[in-house]
Length: 514
Image (cartoon, rainbow, N blue to C red; front, side):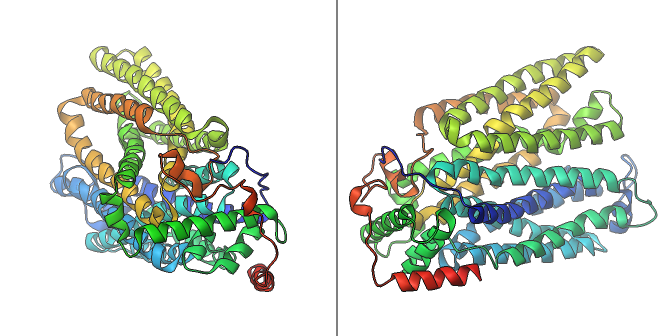
């Protein structure tokens, strides 16, 4: 492993590229979270021909379309198609590259949002929601892979952490747009159509940005396009033929050649599930990604208004608190991304998971006491620890799982490995969103005990099996898992003398900047 890495400059162009990619993460969060405000709009129920008042004839069907019984259709359709999207996009990234994958996902977001915005019946809305789910599942995989492959090793955690921070920023925007739209004239459909249309604008901006975003240098090398890869690396990490960029390219080339020689024509999925070292990484990827959901955060977020209302708060105050909670979530995520390289992935994930578990234990005890006594002091304390939970989750869990799941796989397996790990994320999303309504109805606060037990297991597994990957070049991650690497980034023989390819490199660089 590289004992002391050369200085890796973070250029303005690198910052620009990461900012553009973060827009896709924001789009993902917004498209995922906007359903919450949609299901609170009376005009949506009217257009869909659904009964909004509990107990009235037809309300059971409304619950199916929303998410409790029949209500599972909107959330269930989204998560089911998102799971499919995570698997499909892994193949697309391997064949067509990361930028083309961004473009395909953005186009799907536009189509899905347009159909939802223009929906005039339940079937049309669910079709749009399904397409948006496909786009979301694609975007959640592309982001971490791209971030990790364009960032220098010493800044990879902070840059890849932008994915989780961006997702939460999108959720925050959806909450505030939904809150503001709730004041729209209820006789019009603006209140539910306007929030659903916003992803179209964001996706169009992303499509435009991809014209200036470079392809991943790892993908370029994998496809035999090394001169273009060097041009990208020098633009991202230095100026001209910066020595660090040359070292990076040489290390990538040697490691990719080694991997191709070792696995030849074997399927990536076959390698992932038959080679023990990669099977372990698949298990770790699923552990950390599904671990986001297994903290209970999805249930807390999706049912926040119900939980706040059960504490005796009005609907308006509950909606406002939910928006504030998501705003703080975004802030803590940005902070967590900043800390990732400084604290280390393993340590910060342990701190975050231990903290969320402790806060959830206290919250559950207080919530049970409030249900038993109805005393206001317990309700107030519940709110405090609910927000404390978000501090540990936002700073210590959410921004880091996507980074870990991307960086633990070698370049030829990264897209598909990340897609499998994040398929686990969406599978658990389906499980808990389906289980939550009947669980809350039958066992109430005891439902939180399930998450507490899972968290104890998760903390143990992270402590025992997750190695530290911070500040390790991607091509040297194999060594962290006990494997061998062809070369290290600070090896003397990585210094490359100018060759006849220099002309090609300069031309490719110029083309990128035009």
